[in-house]
Image 1 (cartoon, rainbow, N blue to C red):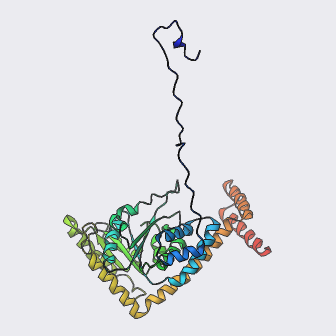
Image 2: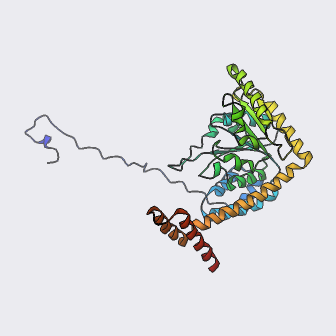
Image 3: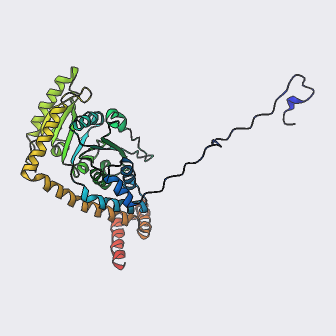
Length: 365
């Protein structure tokens, strides 16, 4: 008997049959059919018209690792390239907690007061364990996210150098073709991201905080050598005097650096991103910089250098991918790794053997 409690000997005890468990998935739910992927020509047409949906789908293809997506993305980029290059590209970096995202919200609204369009490419660090990203920078840009002339695209770093690589560079091309004449690239603020961002922007803005060290500490940071402007955030309330002291210290440190290739002398300003104090002064500095590099021809030279740089970076990336995805190379790498772990061969000798095989293998092909 399934329920002995229902036996006549147990008067007054009755167990009713249970209710069948409901399905975990709504049986009335109808799966939505995914829209077919637009052709490259349709994407280009939409991007040139300023269609945000088409722009977003094109950026997704650029970030995709699928080979068929990459082919379409490259075709879209090539067709958009003649319509790009007409924007101010500004890189924004700083230590975590410096207020980059909050500042971009204020900076963006100030820029859009004068018309035009703004695209913000926010790079979010990916987890080394799960490879996932929160992509939450947009939540700190509440007002900018609602502005009809702003396009905010959070992207995962996915293990690339500091969160920016060729894909970010290609996304800039798409945004410019869509009519965005101001591009902000926000870095993750750690590692070597500053080097990669500096190679794709026109103006490099470093956000600092008061109390992060004296001028000697500032000199030791290679990032300051690349900055075209340094701004000290949270210069309000009781922190105002500390911000002014930090401003003096950073100015003192900058005097010890060699002259920049542009001939521009980086300025150090204070502001408050939260209370929106000092924002116009920062943009006056950026306007002066662009006028300066336009006059001496550095702007065009810098853009040409960046194009050459990314050509070689793309070659390096393709060579690396070809090397590690070769089945024969994978086999030799596994053999060499086993010898190294067994202390039967040094790491350098194992690497040399794998490379020698690779070069001989490529010559036979």
